[in-house]
Image 1: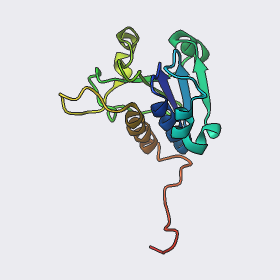
Image 2: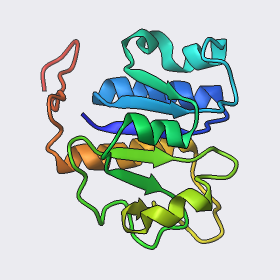
Image 3: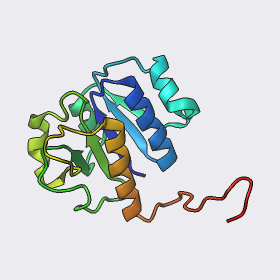
Amino acid sequence: MLNIVLHEPEMPANTGNIGRTCVAAGARLHLIEPLGFQINEKQLKRAGLDYWDKLDVTIYDDFNDFLEKNPGAKIYMATTKSKQKYTDVNYEEDAYIMFGKESAGIPEEILLDYKETAVRIPMFPEIRSLNLANSVAIVLYEALRQQGFPELETKGQLHHYEW
């Protein structure tokens, strides 16, 4: 199972959308405090719709607490500061993909130890960053694509007609 890690997320709507994406993709969500909202906020639940109770979510006091509780975790750092694209790496089935807070990203002091596993989403140079929820979806689904979308439904069907 893939793991999405949010380092100090600030916006409840983004975190709710990411929670919903994690449920749809069969991924775990890890939240590293401080959070910019309360877990019981209406915006968080509204964005996650009726999926929040199906979410496998763990909350940590800080990054060190996360590391202590996930020893040996292979962590990919999603950051605009990386030299390699998110498509340049091969994600393990139990990989952890970490994203920083909306206003500042992952602190550079943390990134220093993860040069080889830091990845970025290409974009025009004058754009600072993408929306956090969109970034998570892009990288998570690339990891799932590499793994053949394990256990995910890959074929749909019309409700009222036949293809």
